[in-house]
Image 1 (tube, rainbow, N blue to C red):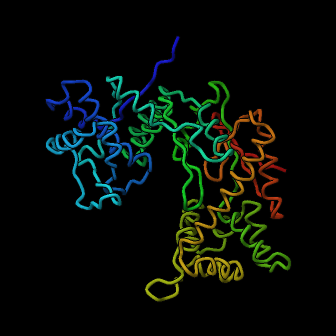
Image 2: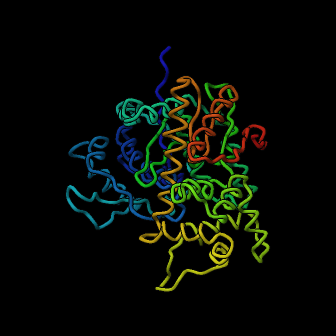
Image 3: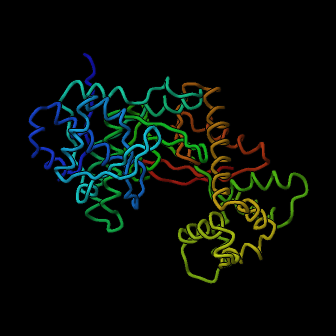
Length: 411
């Protein structure tokens, strides 16, 4: 039996009702064309997971023409504007800047519903726009995408989980619910996406923003459960690669101390011990990134000084000087360098080596974390250790079995 092609629109509930009030929605093809625009605008903000994003989203005329018709696409845009559902930005430069659109409130932040595409032509066009393995440029990207396609999701359990979270957990927002809903439905629809960004060359796909509590519903080939391997103190530890390059032979004592702390996963505990506050490790980690790694060296012409920079200068003067040096031109240069180190080691070294050793092994990355199965755990562990051994570094690798969370230190 031929497998049914699945294509759904994810829509704000109030937005669907408003579309159905339009005379144009009486025909299934016109209905689906209106829903396509609304769904595209609604899902964009949640795929990119930026709760503060309220900007306009570029919809290229070529895409609108493909789905809505070469000569009639403007009529669907005008109808959604007449319905009071979308608004258009004024900025437009032919062949350079596409017109931007966004949903108006309350549609933009309303709870999502799932509506199946009715028109076969629209359904086939939606399927045709999905990325394929052949479109990816490198072997390692194709390997990762092939493994992404091996994944499935226990949809009913996942949806029940996020509904419960929304009702019981005050910190779990409607925005987070909507984002998780989009992720779950796209996996269920086998609507896989995969890109490498130009900033740090990181891989982004359906699992990138998925919460850990939802990964327990993921399966590989419908059977195997996932195990995650990540690096303790990952970003501070990755900075060791830069330090090794800056000090290839004689390593200053404070650099050696910093490398030892980050390699053993004790860096944030050390900060907590020497900071005069009662903040949690989680909060210290967040503030350290914001005030040391990713901050400007100067603010309004004055040196950026805070409790974290003072501690680094006192305890790790050479390390702090190296951090300062990396941000001397632009404070974004350091996070960019760290992400490039991460993607080079995790994807272009470790994953490439795994795929060469065993092309059928399952593993996929979520930035500095690698997901695999018990069958291939040892292979991935060894390759991860080998990836850092070239820099004479040995990370503390933490293991997490998502159906039964546990931690383990590797010898």
